[in-house]
Image (cartoon, rainbow, N blue to C red; front, side, top):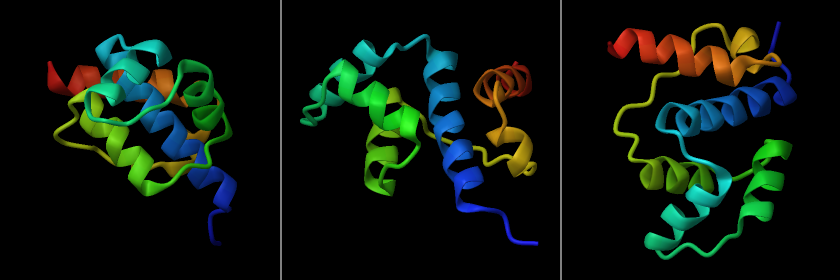
Length: 99
């Protein structure tokens, strides 16, 4: 059975939030880091964009670059990564794998 688009959106949102958590970066901090790369956005706009989970692949990659992500691990259990609390679970599980 195909996975609904909303599930994919939630997973991508949780991946981005997990990378922010792993690095201790707030939305204000992300805005500052993006600005260093010439990308103008403010904290509120970033918070809303990420909360909706509907953003472009370009925006996602800009955030990954700004956060210093060199290797991105895609979860096998998409539905699990997309559930509420998924960002925290991804941040913890990834942190344990790198230690």
